[in-house]
View 1 (spheres, one colour):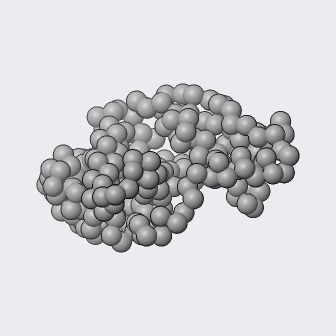
View 2 (view 1 turned 180 degrees about the vertical axis):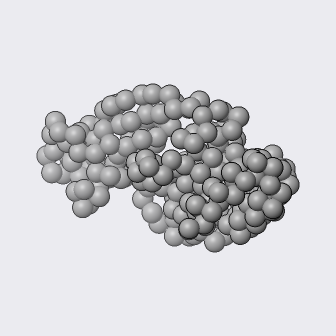
Length: 243
């Protein structure tokens, strides 16, 4: 598999193998369709903290930066695409475009999982959003490597145009939390969203929210704020209930 070969190549690279460096760069170009200038940035962007503990070596800082860059690119795009729409509409559209599940799905379609570096033994990681987080880190790496203008072009060419179908996204009701609350009211159910856990992962605060239906935990969701975690929990709940 490509991922296994990629890990082997990294080992050779850190041993000073120039041929390995060329092969790693080739794999990155094949998946990301961009040619790295500073290879170390991209290796850091691909490295989950499960394999690299140091903030200087893993992708958490780059993820933070890439999240902000992607949000700015999408916000600018929506602002110009919808000149007569209000702030509420623009905010909701941005959420539809850059939510965790959406970015994770895009990362998988791009093949980012083939070159991402993470602990393969931890199966929970495979079902998390680490590939979407890695995509954000890659955006951060490209920004530091090539600047904002080139990064914006890459985001449009590799993410927005091929994967974000904005006309379709307009029709999607992203606020499943409200949908779930409405369903509970119609069916005389007692529904609440409760904070289950709050912790620090790396340098970022993580929230876990539970959807509680008639006193029983129905689903859980994780996010970087309570709203995002509640939406994730609501998505899981609607899938379980089939609504």
